[in-house]
Length: 394
Image (cartoon, rainbow, N blue to C red; front, top):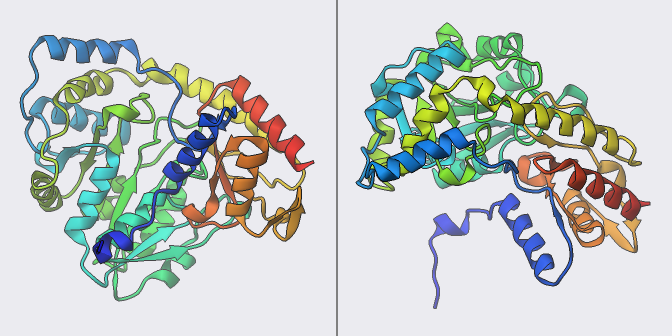
């Protein structure tokens, strides 16, 4: 008899990974599926970063690394925070982890108790909700829509706060919508949080460099929020280093110390070779990766123009990340090729099975009217995918 824990039984499967698995199954049957479901750049890691990793191998970096990261890696992170975000963190406020996902999980596990509430402005990254649940807290969703560029208002935030609220997670540029909160918008939300000193903030800035002319503002740079904010970042997206698994936080020292303690019992220190490559990545000027950002912007413009030509798609123009999040609710209640579309999951599955394009249902991101489409793919694939979606629906 198989008896699993309530913890794992309550944990949902990652929707993005589940869709990727369905796409792989179709590919194994010989069907040419265009994968636009995963948030993974299609670029190779820049050579100057790979060279640093090769040197680390030759220099015999093969031992356990410190739990919270090498000192010189943390120095590079400290300098990056100052250069890019105008944030001053001491080394004891920085913890290097096996990806930004672990960074977020560490923070939630050390801050949350059973019954605490975590506010998630929707749409939100799928794992925020799952990690909150795993930490025995209750996710509280604040809805938004494409009509307001997928951003919440100060009044919505105030209404969502209760005596049980412990944490709120912001993500800008946002996955899945690509929206970016302006400094003015963040300061207005901070004015609400100033009245509630027991609430902490995770600011997930993993997509900060992938922005198209809209400056990214760090929440912790608001003076009154600094001591209550945990800034999360990593190398996966902007540096095309998803598999290298390096994330990090800048946080109040007591939170960083707790995360170090937690990580010491889970994974210990992050990969030693990847950490050496991190120094090269973060010490380099941001212009070294601008060629990727410029290409993402071209693809953004391309996919937006193509999706606007598909009947029933309501779309805005995202200012960052590499996703579009069209509202496809006009198809709900309709039949496509004798298949009734009841919701975004039905629509996403229809697109996969009939247009052979893998996307992700907005249900997983807290917005059931939308689907997420990643444009971290070649222009050729984007054009082909949009044509196949359009033809399938027509």
